Structures are given as structure tokens and as C-alpha cells.
Image 1 (tube, rainbow over the protein chains, first blue to last red):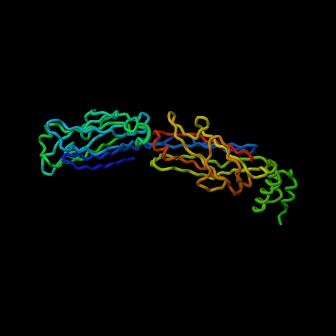
Image 2: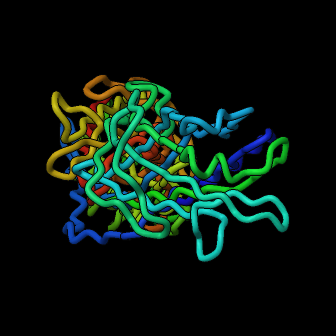
Image 3: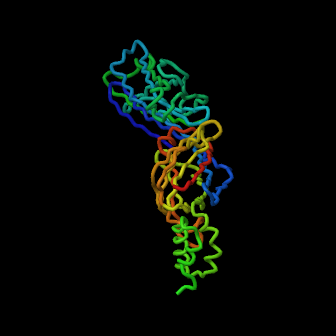
Length: 193
Length: 184
């Protein structure tokens, strides 16, 4: 199962985020013996069947929203945190997450035409309500994350499970051209573990 | 005309068993069978209040790929009733806790639904509740095991709902479903 969500936004400095969740399609086979039992003729009759099904590993990320840094003050870093929902159906509810930006070779950068791209940082926390987390490296999976979601989109149980934190450093803000729109896309790939 | 008359055969049965016997003889007549067959099958007709469920097959859903849609498997079975009414009740029990309709992967469960239809070749029916009898089901089976090419008489449908699948843990799930037929 692959889930893609694209969100757009526009501002002085903006980041567009795309989230992608995939599942390792571990199509498990089962070795259960098939042995239907037929009933016999009598006052009552009982037969039985065996039912088997194999559910593959699946994961999904939802609840992502666009990030807009509007009129960011260059004297301090600009940070945006949001709560998301990550669901994994493995026995441990484990997953890994990999972020990729829209810059060169997947770099976390915002672009504005021919102007110098502006870098930003990405952090991830497996808990919701966080304003910081583990720094992600573009294109490198952060493994060992565990979800608390009980449904794929957190429609019941916890409504959010994790935190995404995006920041632009003060120095980088100072290098940006005022009143100019910078845009980028951040893609998040979640894989069940 | 056939060498035997159904009335003759019926006369060899107890009066209370006449309906089952007549259904049997009607089938035999269609097949052009003789009096010898009538005699040979007398023990079957003599069990007029007996029931039998057969032609059951295991259900394997295999490796599921789409967890967002209901998945259904139906099969035609033979549900025979020798009751005077020709009817039966069916009671299904799963291998889950308290007879629940659940599959297990050893640690988690996956719920399924069971439907029953008294007609053959159906893909839906009446929802069964685990452990509760669905009564008044008419059987069109003329022989206990629906042999000789005679009419099967019931359909069993197993459903894995998307709601259960999409929130299920991964793994290989298995379970047993038992069906109990009683004359009705």
C-alpha cells in the first residue's frame, strides 16, 4: 500500500510537503493444512472448514499539513512543528521514516528561481506534541520508530502519533531576499518494520 | 413404466418418513433407477429425521493485497434434511473466544463474517451469529450427500471486511468454522 498526500501553500517563505507511505510487500504464505470435515448423517450433523488469510505488512502516514513561514524574523530561527499520524500493522508497530527534499540530490532546500537555495532542517519524533526530535538526513532512513496508532488514519484511538519539525536557521533567513517567495517540497517515506 | 412404483417403496417406509422417501424416489425416477436401487437406498430413507452437511471445502484467502475492500468467498454445500418439513437449522461456531468468528495469527485476531443461504450457488445470505441457530432453512437436497448429481442445497459465504483488514496486524491468520445442522 502506498499513500501519497500532496499539500500546497504559498507565502514569503514556504515549504510544500509530500508524504509517502509505502509498505514492504511481504506477502506471507501460510502453511496451514487444509482439512475440511464433512458431517455425517444423523440426528444432527456437524462439518467444519479451515479458513486462512495472510495480511501483508502495511503502513500509512496522514495528517500532514503545509508549512508556511510568513514574514519570518531573520534574527531568530523559524520553526514549525506539526502532529501527524503514522500507522504500522507489524507486530511491533515499528516503522522507519526517510525524508527527501526537492533540492539537488534530495537536499532539504527551498528555491526561488535563480537565487541561492536556502537550506532547512527536518526533525522527526515518534511522539506527538513535540517541538524537537531526531534530525533527519536527506535520503537516509531513520529506523526503530514505533507507532501508537490503532487505525490507519488515526480515526480512532490516538488522533496523532508523531511530530514533524521543520526549521530555517537564523543565518539562512538572513541570506534570503526579502519579499521573495521560496518554495520546496518535502517527501516522507514510511516503511513498516 | 418403471419396474417399481414409488408408492410401493413408500409403503415400505414408516408413515412419518414418507416425505423424505418420496423426494428420494422422485430423484431415482428421474435417473431411471430400478426397484433394486429403491431397496438399496431404503436405509437412507429410513433415517427420515436425519440431517447431514457435506461438500464443505476449506477457505483460503491467500496473500491479501487490497486491505481497503471487503473480500468474500462463497461455496455451495449439501445441506440435507430428512425432517418431515424438509427444513433444518444451522448453527455456526468459530474458533475464537466463545466461538467467535475470528482468525488468529497466534497473537492477534482477525474478525470475519459468516452468511448462510439455503439455495445453492449464492454469494450472499443471512448473517449468522456465532452459536445462534438460524432456523427454518428449507433443503432441496434429495440425498444426504447430494450425490448422483442431485441438487446441492446451501451456500456458505465468508467475508473479511475492509474495516477489519485495514486495521489488522500483519501475519498469517487461520481459524476453524464449524457448522451444525439440526432437523427443524
